[in-house]
Length: 354
Image (tube, rainbow, N blue to C red; front, side, top):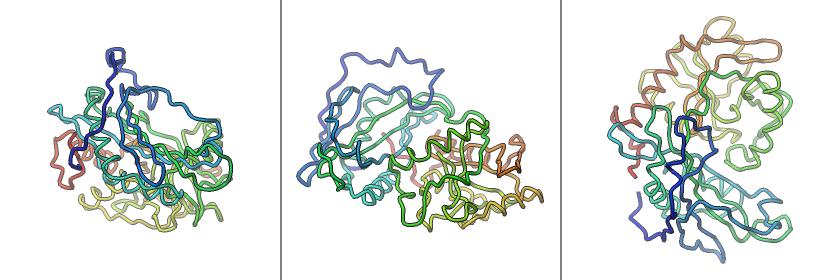
């Protein structure tokens, strides 16, 4: 991490930690005692500060509410077997955050505010990291436009914040996914690769309709033919054909360059799997299922980590999988878990000590 910078800290008078029920932690509902905040104005970032988690006030005319200049990231901190606290691959999220900022015509957040601010915030609230398997402290950095004026143009002021949320497994059970053909998430030249709030707002109707049919999420397809697979609403997707694993490529800029996705690809290759990052058509998936060559489908993401997919529906064809027979995705999940827990060497330098 960066050299220590002097970030002003205002501590809570009384921690809420004792009130937490760590046996029941729905994703994103509870937040730790403190948060980080920094403001951008006149072309520079002001010094960040850490303060008690609290409401913030702003004018109803701020541009983020009207024109959608808002981006975020998802990162996790874990405890290892010795009780130490580590953040998983924060440098990669920092880079991706600023790629999103550039696409949304927002200022880059400096490394010292993003990374060192995050480290100090997590260090302050590290007791909020659950010491349980598949549990973690979810880290949510985000930035939004704060100019109090109407008019379609980039804002000149912004607020950057980091929140911390203890959480359990995002998807505790294997998932049922519906291949989406009506709605479109992203197209070449759009903002599909950016982690901006609008991408998620636009996806809600499709996911609600999928749930009404008994499915957990949708698998997005391309905007033109609705045949070429992109990503699931909250994660990247992988298809296992015997010893070859295929995942949609990043070339067209329509899917998120997942940090967990990259970790999965790295570990798959180290375990001897052939990994193909390329375009993949839904017809290939259907054909693979019918022939028996397609043995697993799973998703990867910061929130989801690795989630098994037990059913994929395309039109009237339903593909079912016995997730208890999965071998590839459980093996990779085990490797990533052991790295985070300190039971396996971190040969890639993914863990940053708090």
